[in-house]
Image (tube, rainbow, N blue to C red; front, side):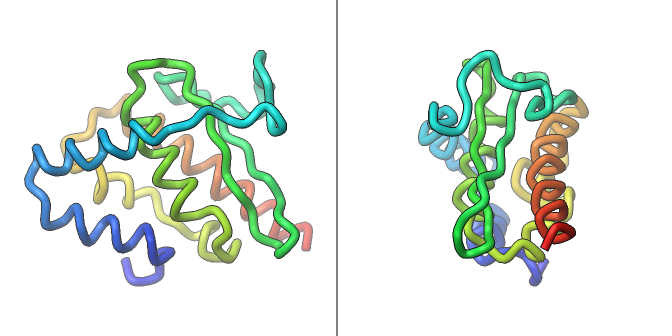
Length: 146
């Protein structure tokens, strides 16, 4: 996991030292920092193209192109109890926004299990992977267009 964006690698390293309850506490703190997508990016009803179809929490993802050639990632999570989706949105927004597109495009899905643990339910795992797929796909599209 050495090729990960630095903030994502640092979080994974920190969580590897945490026990199950500490991990949950850390992830809840991330979820508590969640802010819905800014109205300048999108307003309800959100476009289906931004909908993460596999996500039980009804997540949406947007990639905003920045002047430096990177992207900033924005999220909406429609389920108020969607703590995993909200924490994952904050983690991706903070660790992937503004990073080189090659780094973002190559984030492997197994980072989700490094963060949330191996006992993540299939439904939750599919949703979080779907959110990551929207982000990595946006980075790959931008790279191809360049």
